[in-house]
Length: 216
Image (cartoon, rainbow, N blue to C red; front, side, top):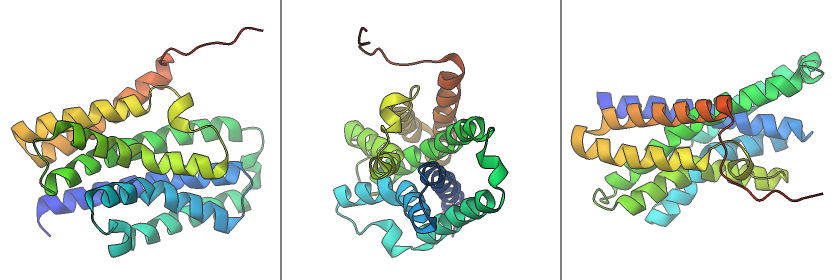
């Protein structure tokens, strides 16, 4: 495994852990059992990538390399075990802890998987198709979280929280531009950091897209 492949693999592992943790947190907040928590963790971690691979006509990478599923299950079980045996964390402080954890984990996972989606499309021969690469990056970034929220019967995070999918779109476009000019490693590192930065700033300053407010 060359250095570039190792860096990408390490980033994928970080994204898998981050998204699996966010999925597990949602499952716990919905009072699911250990199996349900693991399912949500796995779906969040690999769901977007599986949809991307199906669109590209490939066997989903999570099925070919089950290490991603194994890491997602291990992460979910660890989160479940910690909160099961430290139940005092689920009381008054849990609301604040949950919001901060979701922001951090979702932002990291979103940034990493957005650029992984773009680079996967490039590796499949679509370097010149900016629209497709942006779509693949965004789908990889937000797809797992969308499936997680639908399964948990909560309003999809990407539709109700501070700038989310838009951060993924911006990161994907920037990743394509940097990749064409400077190569893979600068593209994935800079673009993922930009996505995380946008998410943190959006949460800090309450950036939201316009919405119609109902009266009364």
